[in-house]
Length: 116
Length: 115
Image (cartoon, rainbow over all chains, first blue to last red; front, side):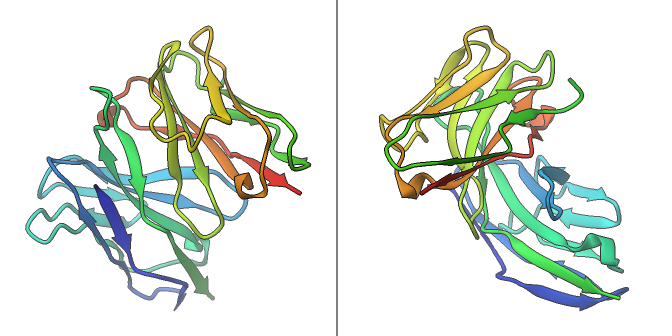
């Protein structure tokens, strides 16, 4: 079945460092890909998404490009801030067994801590 | 409402008891999802509603779990004869439609602890 693998954490960086969190996937068909973020004590929030190959999702300085040839959707940010400390989840949509249901299949999450 | 509301935020129950978890989606959102997130894991799909009907319940772990959405808005996840392994954060998400392009909005979750 479909699956998502993301790099294990925790990841600890200094402020203004470059961030990469790797995500690869296995899927039949053409899934959409997502990064969600969970700040301490808060619910999951959509960070960015890409719905087809070569699309680049971007938000709040974060970027990820849908690479079909490498089945990857790595998250990057050029200069992290303390406020970026959170858990980041990579996910893909799966049509499932109900025509229009695009339930999400998730990676395990990567915890990021940014120190001042 | 402005967001997806889940109540209670925390629930502690004894093994064997019955619990109900409530989700109030964004007004007008026809699609509603329940997920379960165990510590250190990503969310795990449980059930999907389109309107009042459960369009996909393939993620429910066993027949102790049941969910309803009788009027197409508020949904209740019901767990009978709770077990310690049911302890997790139960997440609800809603969407204007079932497709990916609409996006999903998650609630803050209900943390269920079975003792």
